[in-house]
Image 1 (cartoon, rainbow, N blue to C red):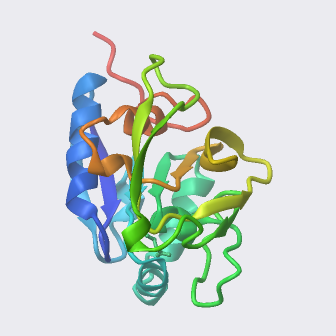
Image 2: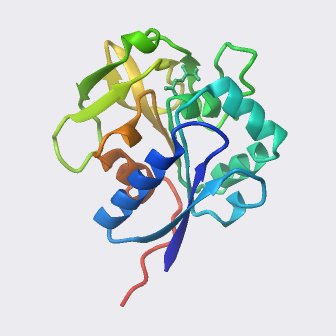
Length: 206
Ligand SMILES: NC(=O)CC[C@H](N)C(=O)O
């Protein structure tokens, strides 16, 4: 069967997630159709979702204005995978301490926006990420990245500079950095196809 993937596309680096999902699906031998989510009514048909990096206050506002926010909450409540990166993680968090973000509370973490500095402080770091199929460090791109100030009940998959930067909470995986901006789609694979705590339709048996 063909899996339906959705990339939340109200703002942010959408095309890069589409490419990363297609690459991860190929690696995992799954057939995937990816659609961009700009309006309500599409999320209920999706087997898994990505929420991209961008500007969290804008993404938050548009998701609520357009009626997409409750659909994403229902998606996660049904145990379906969601992968949220950078601004996506901020929007998905339980708390940001920033009143301009209306958090979706999809994972039990508190984030601190821009904790690793401004745009000019962007950097790439080799990260050890728990759960990847091999031991190769992941090339993590940080751009105005949030830190996870409190990981709550979420499982910490990676830390940088002593702070959690990748977490899993049931069907939701979140990263402070941008796996979609590198050709390495291992974390997309982990979030969508290798998360035992998420519900994804099985491959058809022969
Ligand atoms: N690269 C990013 O997604 C940056 C996120 C941005 N700092 C925000 O708070 O929205």
